[in-house]
Amino acid sequence: MKYSIIVPVYNEEEVVLECYRRLTEVMQQTGETYELIFVNDGSRDRTASIVSQLCSSDQSVKMIDFSRNFGHQIAITAGMDNASGEAIVVIDADLQDPPELILQMIEKWNEGYDVVYATRAERKGETGFKKWSASLFYRTLNKLSDIDIPLDTGDFRLIDRKVCEAMKSLKESNRFVRGLVSWVGFRQTSISYVREERFAGETKYPLKKMLRFASDALIAFSLKPLRLASVLGSFVSLFSFVFLIWVVGQKLLNFNTTPGWASILACVLFLNGIMLIILGVLGEYVGRIYDEVKGRPLYLVQEKRNFAAMQQQPLN
Ligand code: UDP
Ligand code: MG
Image (cartoon, rainbow, N blue to C red; front, side):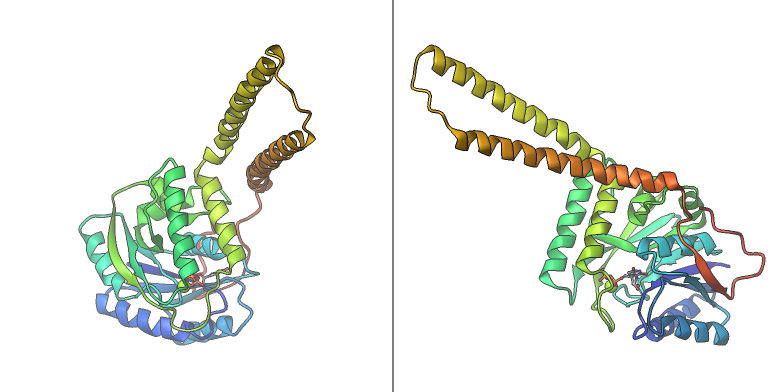
């Protein structure tokens, strides 16, 4: 198998056929063998049955059907676990990432690059809030993380077999795929593109999932939020030390010292607030550690279609 295309799908009944059509058109132009792996992430609509029909009519279509919704990043991981191509491409089902770009990625891959990621020069048809929050997210992540995670770059990318093997060897269950691909290294390059509007349907990333995604990413790739606690602590103690000297000075020089419950209350509330925030940050990390320690499988598959019987089991 030359090329594997991984398409995570969650409630995408309106787009999945068009996605199949565009991908097939592009992949046939390469003249090489390919597989389209649709990972059905517990869709509640007709997505699974549509993909199932495609599997019956076209042997290059494969399906991994999750037992429930495990999330976009896990779906990509399952695709990588089961891909057999020499080059693997991850693409969204909603055609926001134009499939035609895959040909450019393949060109770069033939030049010898192991990772070709697609950077969004512009985003069409997305709300101002989404653009703003995404931009803020990529910049914050880039500042806080110790490795270089490219700005404005989603999961739309081509990776070489050896990068895929490296990804499979990473055992963590908190999977932020973009960060992990950066972490493994190899020869990486980018191409830039304009992100189109969604072909149909609505985003499958409501605010709650977006926040979860962002905190997973930050926590997986940065220890800085933890260090923030000590920085804040130092500032507060420095301030209170200066304040103490000032209070003692006032007393010694016999100024009028006013009894002020309001200021005390304000200080107490402020410090408690900081303390709770820090506890919350700690909790986020401890929770993720707990998840890792439990060592549950990343995902459960209820059905696989069109995979050879001797398929290797996923590495969890
Ligand atoms: N997706 C998924 N599981 C989820 C949410 C999304 O597999 O829980 C898939 C979705 O079907 C799509 C891709 O991830 O193929 C990107 O989602 P979407 O286009 O809704 O995100 P956006 O482009 O709005 O950020
Ligand atoms: Mg989309």
